[in-house]
Image 1: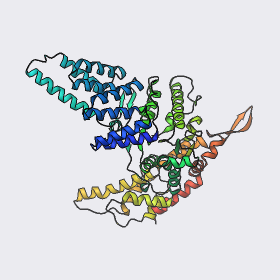
Image 2 (image 1 turned 90 degrees about the horizontal axis):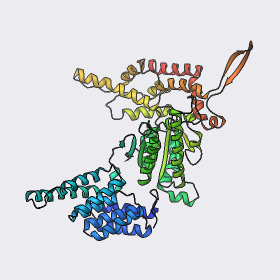
Image 3 (image 1 turned 30 degrees about the vertical axis):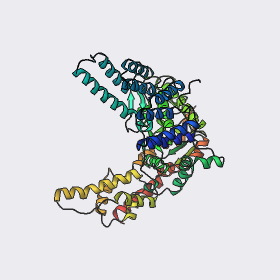
Image 4 (image 1 turned 180 degrees about the vertical axis):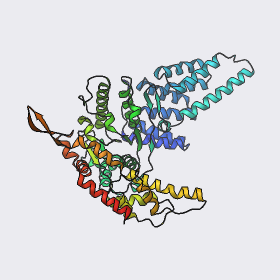
Length: 518
């Protein structure tokens, strides 16, 4: 039989049986686990994870012959496996075949040089081979060391593989991601204030595709691959991504740009591949790329002057990103990729086509009613009295959810400090909020500066220049092409509105009135 490709995916039915077996294994129901692995292999005879876990059960039950056969099958299908020879070495070591164990541990390290457990086992075997097995106390020490070593490897290998990944720790060595952590999000849509249309859209197009792919196939709907969440900073894009993962009950992988991008050639591409591989092994999974524009930057010399250095490395990163997204598109079931950005026009167009980040959703700043609900939400666990939420919603006109949370936090500090200094408690009230909002550092929204900063990127402007002694009006277009102007029209409208002199004056007056009058 030819070696199985490392990225070959098992059938969904076999994978579900494998998961059932893992659950039984965790509960100590080894016979039930064995039955599930047997059924999984009847469906998919090349499912290496099922062979490995079945070998592990056989090893614990004492059926060494069957365990070896399954491990040999794993190594036949995947010659580069490091886990199978490790367990073969453990079996040899348990039979006092130390030379045989050394052979298998060396093979494990040959396939995976940085495998810590194999290194530890090699050190243990080397110490045994240099001891006198007839040396009385040394022999007793030998047996004790062997028992401890066997117990350690049993504890390590007896965990189903997905559980080994759920350590909550990222493993990065010399700029390369070896493992990226993931977790189950406990955040749900009930913690996302307002945005009813957006939540409905996300449920129908993302969550349903993950939880009920059978329905999508039945009606000929293409399973989603990626979605872009875009909008001003602080509007809750990351929070919504976590809520999507919570609603879908999917593993949530946060792909951090500072971990992916590395100064050495080739590492960035390897890191991207490692993240997608992690998702493929732990479906259903959502990969979330925050600040996607920093990684998926437009290729073709976006004003940085050049063809080499950093721009060249970023082009390679985008190319690798496209390769990985194409791989998900070919086999999308169980994986969804979310991207978030404040500047969608800076993302390479190839990443935004259908089948990659083809769908996009504008996460806008909160409306009046949403600001009111946000203030209620951020003060619900605080001792408070007589807070006019409607007035505060007007006083925070133009604020992002992050701004509102900051205001509520700062206001709560005032009664806290009062109780500490006066040894007498009091409740959070409107005066506390007014003191915070009248502070010049807190009186304006963080979005104001951002709107002014990006205005030049998206809004065309006419400039008068002198050419050959004559005045000529030249229109300088923003970064958006005609299609992007339509695609991001809601965001462009918000930027224009919030940088318009008349609207700025109206907003200032409304906020002043709410703070100082009513």
